[in-house]
Image (cartoon, rainbow, N blue to C red; front, side):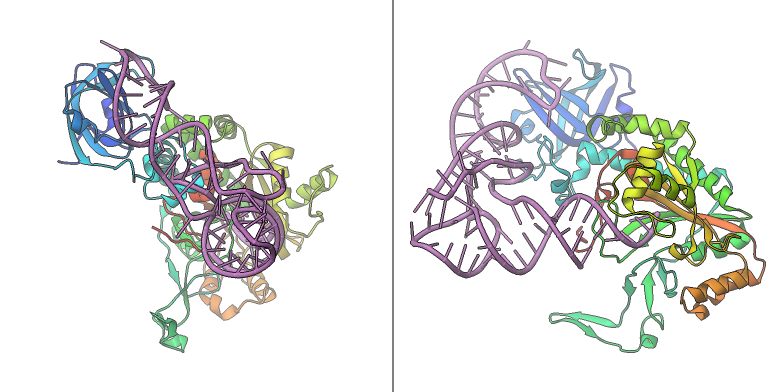
Length: 463
RNA sequence: UGCCGCUUAGCUCAGUCGGUAGAGCAAGUGACUGUUAAUCACUGGGUCGUAGGUUCGAGUCCUACAGCGGCAGCCA
């Protein structure tokens, strides 16, 4: 056995009459008088290979072991299919069983299961239509991300996953420590002083690579990170994970306008890549998961994003007849219901909001001349809400120092971040994009736990 | 973390007024010369989430806990 053999995807391309061997996992077997039909899939493509087993070709006792979930190989000949449903099929001449799957105990059945049930069987759900398609799209989108940035001369950089700077300010963090010992009677403090801990001070899993990415951008011009990110928020919603993958470009010599252009190009180009490379998978999502999917994806690729300032958005919201649960007024943060209304009702496509009040945004965002707003942007998309958050960064040392102090943050901890403004500072900008949010948008999947192989949420770290 | 909902067969769910449980699908067996979420017939399958409480009697009413889900906040 060797990895160099044909995938089922390739068998579909073979001319009728060609001898071939198909390896894969059985979706179903249907018996009829005189012949059996086996649906075989190896994850290489959405479509199953239909294998025809004429009566008497293989030992009936062996054929009985070809059940849903079993792993087998069929040797045979590719033939044109006499029935509708597939152009070609494999006419079997021999069968090898690699691993049986007892139908009495195999947890998955050939007919539909709920997403909630499949989450409990996350180690096996990839064998079904939905999750095979999800992870093929995930792969293609991941490739598209790197291609997108590579084409534009961005350098892929790897920022640390463990960080000792507790100054990132983007939500609750997971502490990394060797100061605790875990025994039968629970946790025990082995070292009391943080100075005695592994890194000599408190350390955490990263909540963002942005600050590190900024240091790389101020020297390599255009860079991006694409890696795991951790938030210890106790948030249990369909769009939050404790561990997720984030894409963070950072660009020197760049304003908020350039940042918006990149964000828009990014979404359009990666979605186009999925449309080009995941046709059958997206077709499936369109049929079974989200009926408007292909329409909206095509629409996004073809039309520009709407851009409006926070101030304009508040005016639109105040002028609408909608009965919002939370009132809107200038200076308050927009609620989910407001963001949804803007992108779904008011605009009907993705919208980029800019220039938020400084009080509701992070300290590092560049202060506008009005002294009240900052050069922030949020990209909102129908169905999923906020998909990108970014800003032009404050490059002026005195302004940045003032904003750190105003925010009540420990200015000493930012010595290296402030050094960027002391030595060779330049206007720069960047954004963060949750990869799983993009996945939700492209696949139409309703829950973020279903677009990552193994999800991490409060109370759940199985598999 | 707050609010709401759910928990009954392998899965998805019914279960009336409180009187010891039912369907579809799945699975097993058989039938059918081309099925494609195959079809048809038959068969087996249950400590009703856990622990208390009310009651002659609890799947059903009450309390607590657990798990899951939805929404909100936080954000990506």
